[in-house]
Picture 1 (cartoon, rainbow, N blue to C red):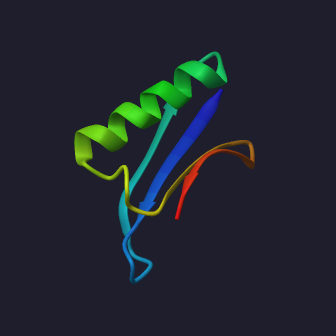
Picture 2: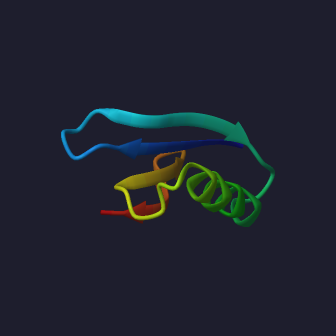
Length: 59
């Protein structure tokens, strides 16, 4: 399944926009959280989706 992780700056511009594939949501969520931590974006507005389903969100 395809997953999309997007991080937004306060002005709405994209700071990170990545896609990746996993077989299950939990593995993808862990990957997304790790990527956010690597880039130090845990507290920045972000979302992760799969087929329109919101899996991670922070505002």
